[in-house]
Length: 377
Ligand SMILES: [Zn+2]
Image 1: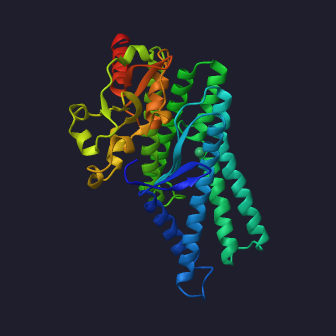
Image 2: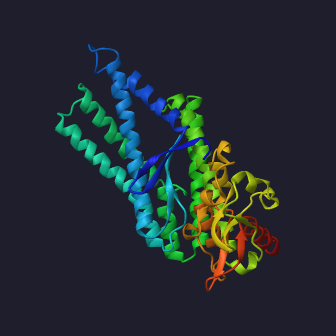
Image 3: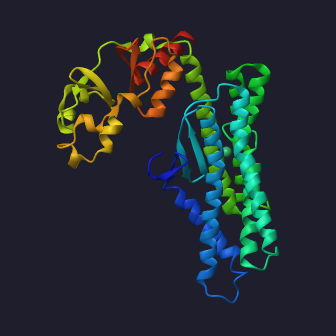
């Protein structure tokens, strides 16, 4: 996502904050500061309701983060690499780089999120009870708001529209019953699109005041959320179609035998001037005494500020060979594309019995998709 900053990592999972998150955070804080807390802080200083609103907003986003951590930790426990968790305008999303291999794993991975939200809801309900309950004291009001929000989050995410958690649960059932991953994804995505249109419809009806129990501002929010979910459902289906098409191809079908190389001792300015770096997106094999020691991708190059290009070498900026996914000749093209996306590499080396045969580029893999589509029209 553009406009994102890495905050750090929790249990080895990188946490990324997209700037759009501030919009939602401001919205939540404003509602709490203007509507919820002024009533319980009648006689105190005016900044107290706002301090409480900010604290509640932060705890709510910590709850969303915990929900996403549950998805990510389960994925990792089943050997699926997680790129990170991004907090953004619509809450949070775990960037899980591969789909589950079995319906049961998909079910557990999807269910872990809403289950965590419901558990958190119970925890906040307990805190509400421990602090005396009621709705005229600041702390119980905050705990009450948090248990309701977490319960809402858990229930909303269980709605059966792919790619939401409930949609993934639905897909895992359909997949388990029919044994057909592609069909299960198609049906779950259609449900996702249907749900998104329903959200837009309810949102629009609230905007023109046809639905009395939603405010027009919430209506606008529902329309935007519906549009986002509709796009996400369509994109997820398209992605599944691409990966399914690629499963019939092997690395050998997209192999380029000659690898563009640069010497590890070259500075990044010198690398940028080489003919091989003029091809976009380039992928350079970094060599030391004719042995490949790593890969240099445009992402790695652009991470280095230009002011340092004249002093930093290719060997320092590269991704070391040990950390690069090595492709086998018979590996299917779908798993290669997923590895490229996970590692942000536009190409990966193909190695057999310790010998470098060449490389597979993202462009070559995508050309296979185009070829497959031409053959199947
Ligand atoms: Zn979730």
